[in-house]
Length: 65
Image 1 (cartoon, rainbow, N blue to C red):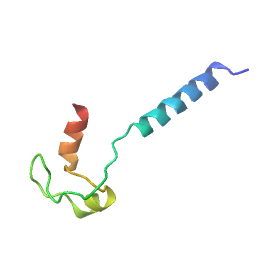
Image 2 (tube, rainbow, N blue to C red):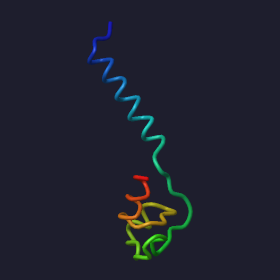
Image 3 (cartoon, rainbow, N blue to C red):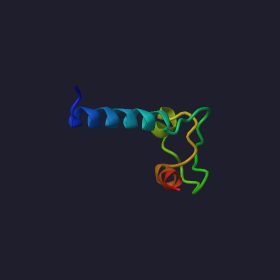
């Protein structure tokens, strides 16, 4: 029989899996400059996130809204 810790652990695991599935996924060709502030997007970010359109700061703001 499962105790409270097992139940809480299972719930946390399921919640984490759901959040991973719902994360933003980028596809396509990356922009060289942010579509919001026009700052150059670092090459490493463009290579690691195909289809990225915003710099880190603007992406953070967009995800909060």
